[in-house]
Length: 453
Image 1 (cartoon, rainbow, N blue to C red):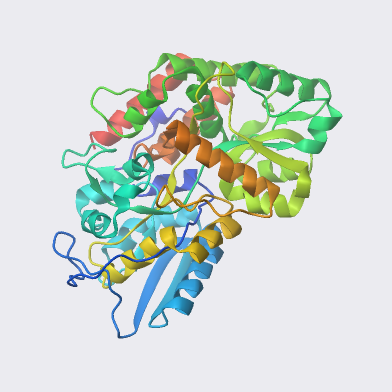
Image 2 (image 1 turned 60 degrees about the vertical axis):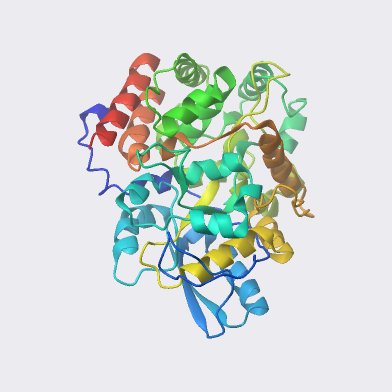
């Protein structure tokens, strides 16, 4: 069924629903606090304190199931350094959290910190804290502003500019995981340097009776691959403008139509399995881990787990451009956490967030527990890892950071676009029930419907 024929729920009732598009959340780094100041717990606009209180404080965190272990490790490390602060971690599956996040943020006694990928409606509704005072107090202007822009919004509702409403715990990058053993059997030299070389590698896998791409067409796989192709074919700023809801931006772009056409071409020639619409995220990852597929499009949040299961049989590369000298571009975004507007201990929570990004031990936890970059000040080195795959994913993140090629996820454009529009329309694309032109127009129509409420 086309999403054009599905009733779109009110944007505020859909708050956070696109969290399911991330499926695997990530966590991030540690840090040293700034200088002291007057305490103003509960006030985003006034003075804030960068000094921990002497009395005991408990910080409650609502996170995703996938991120729970890493967040717990960060909390334990913080308490070991600052024993007056303890943590209570609650975790829910991404889909459940997406459905419940509005209620969690607005209850009388909300957690101090909540995982929330799609935050524009919450910021507009004033139910999350404006973090500008903390950014100024802690000097967050020394961090990558391209990544912080993802959590900014101005008074008009435009994203990418204005005040800061979230900070990441872990900074992700997407690309292609590949089976090194299967690649060797096929005589392939990887990573590919161009899209044509990637295409040729896929064709070699199909010719050998193997799956070229393990594709989660039932849920998140198509948007990942679609956006990778759009990044290769077009101007990444155009899609970022659309995600950030800039005036005049549209999903109906030549590069996006070309990307959608490539998806259908790959279905037709067997690069994407014909039953992709029945394959969910976990099944696609199981297929890849079992050695049944050469490639799987995904993000660095899977690197530690894949390395533990596959050892040196797995590698990672950024999706290539159409030419070997193309500037690297990838979906690269923080796993954003917000402080509810009515949270009890905002200053302590902000201290903890700053610590994650700047403390040496915390930054190492982010790399070791998740396999992604800790973010934070750009002059701090990314901790090294003994795991080769993690080295590859963190290096890929640094490459994107240096190239300025970080693009947000299209599923984060509005709270409901992922589940309400993108999933059914991508399935229709895979099944050949829509044309590339109709597909991009349907996404744009759903986007406009949701923005207009």
